[in-house]
Length: 284
Length: 78
Image (cartoon, rainbow over all chains, first blue to last red; front, side, top):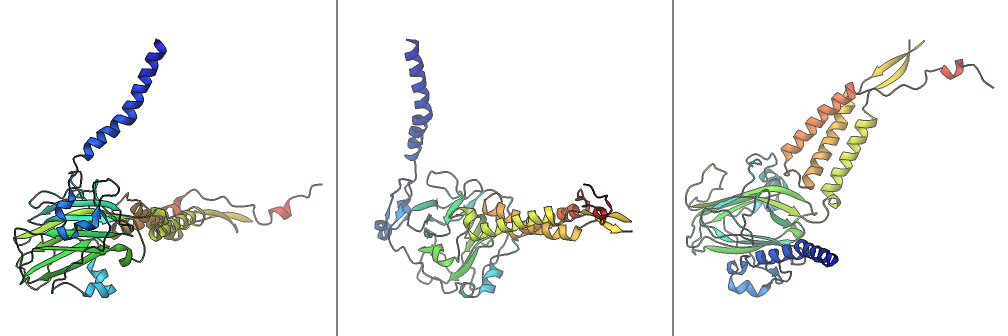
């Protein structure tokens, strides 16, 4: 009788440790946000959730974003202009702020994929003053819950400013030390939504891992001049700031990781064996 | 007569400290411990260079080997 009781207790403990959390996690999965609501109907047949993470995986060619006539093309072809634009000194990024934000009427979804089209992470916003959220409904883009982007993969976005329509608008988007782009458009055809993709696997010379802060702004009726960074932007506008985690292979096997290990090993060896004071003999 | 002399290496220490600081800083960034940031990397390099310089100047010294000519003056043993 006592042995049976012990077995029951052990079985109960195993159930509590293994199956109950899994069941609870399953309950949580039921509350995931359906991201297909943000994807226009003409693209929906290119998406299917193959890995059951609640994020639609990607099977097609993806959308091609439409450029505005004021979009910056210089930074895309001129390395110096690009490096100057990505803010190498890091000014303007508040690394002490761990939060995320996206204000204004902008709404939509951003989904990152690996090179096989399997979803890595996603973030959406429904407009208004609230921050962007992940597929589980939690605040996304914070230091603790950053938007993960595969540096060997692709990023898709579907966004809109509905019900507002911006004209003579300017925008910029930058990730500290990694990426910067800006542009604008008079928008004579009253467009208020766009979609596109960024293929990091083709754009980047090598994969890397890092966590960086990214921010952007989009301002209505700003005119043809490039939008500078401002403490507050003329309304109506959309302004956002998030943390982005660039993921990929083992960090120590990426070129920056290998360089870091070599520098650290060389420096450590040099400090220990080549820089220490030494007693030597001198003929008096 | 030979005398012991202490040789300090603050410049070498600073240079190797700078290399070590850049490596450690970059390593912490690729491992997501710190946000990737050039100013932070520079701060790491400078701080480690200073520490390396202090190490090169004031660390416990390596002991000298046998005095020159000491082997020759020792009596031969059979």
